[in-house]
Amino acid sequence: MPQPGQSDDRQPRAKASPLLIPPLPEVCRNIVDAIPYSIRGEDRIRYLVEQVHNLPDKARTSLRMHVEHFLRRMITMGASDIDFGGHASNRRIWFRVNGDKKPDEGMGSYSVDDTTVLILNLLTENQVRNLIDDRSIDISYHLPEQGQRDRRFRSTVYFDYEQIALNMRAIADEIRELRSLGFHPAIERGLMFRHERDGLTLVTGVTGSGKSTTLDAIVDANNRDFSGHIVIIAKPIEFLHESKRCIIRHREVGADVLTFKDGIIQSLRQDPDIVVIGEIRDPTTISSAIEITDSGHKVFSTLHTSSAVESIARIIGEYPPYEQERIRNRLADVLRCVVSQKLLPKIGGGRVLAKEVLWVTSSVRAAIKNDNVSEIYQMIWEGSAEGQVTLEQDLARLVHENKISVDTAIDFANVKRRLQQLLR
Image (cartoon, rainbow, N blue to C red; front, side, top):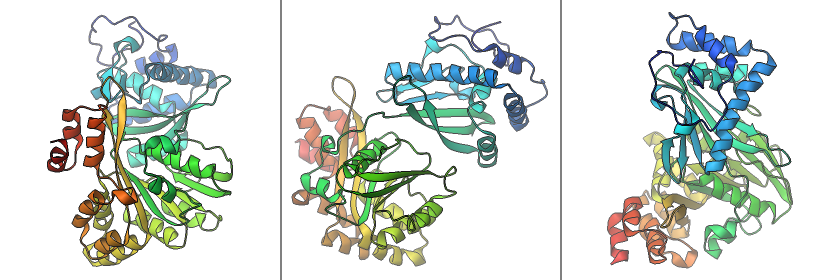
């Protein structure tokens, strides 16, 4: 029987590369070989759920340890993400290294059913129910490390053409110092509770742009700087902060609290100084975030947008037209800072951070209230005295410092014409 997994269509395979991990546990092959031929789609997944959850603890542990071989390989490679499961994976385990996602032939070949068994084994019965109901579930995963802090992964299990797939992203086990991110001293001061005790700060960017790293650096800097209480509400919880000068509570949506809205409202009764909201993605969460900020708290959150102007427009655009004027006024009053960032391929290897930083001055506040958001880019461009910088200005700096190529800068620019002016 082929190793480490058997194909469900019994087609011959190409000669495999030498395996970098042990063979797939026998229990997985036994389950897969026993699947009735007639079962397809969701019924097949429900059948495998029942088989996996009826396994003795020793068998389930062997399956979990096999996945942990994947994760240790991921750590050795310095990969940020791992993907497997579903037909799209072509029976391979995929890793993203320095921005590029590729299959690793040395990890062996796995059928769709093999990976479905491995993935379902990671989930609790409640998580499986949520997966089947919602077609996707976010969880955190801990990899035990002997004598060291556990490595943690942000994970998403989801349906892919009636199959189960998984992505895991490695959570940094060390926090970067806030100063290492290159903020202007005026911005760095504004991010600290001791100097600015209220207001909403957004860290934005596409998936994989380092938002969590920046947010964790801000939390850690405040944790070391003042005596208070920080509440983190996220789905899932990523980095676990150790209470230092601050007591830090971690509330995972789905495990410790039902929804982001519930977590935000409940935090008002928990005497927080800072509230960190993992992501604001819908009007309910946005309104709750604005409300708690308006009550005098300092709030940090993230948003999937590529620029400061787009971030403001996205928040306002989440509401129907008849509500937008009210939201513009409330947002203008509470918003303090927007950091929009991207991770770029660096000359010589690795990646480097480029960021756009908006600090909400009286002029920016007036532009938001008067529905003149398009004017804000120019205000950032001219706002270097307040620590503001457009993405294009930061890209030009990285080119002049020989950290990125001109082509890379142009590829990642939001306003290419402005960047070209700076590079002349």
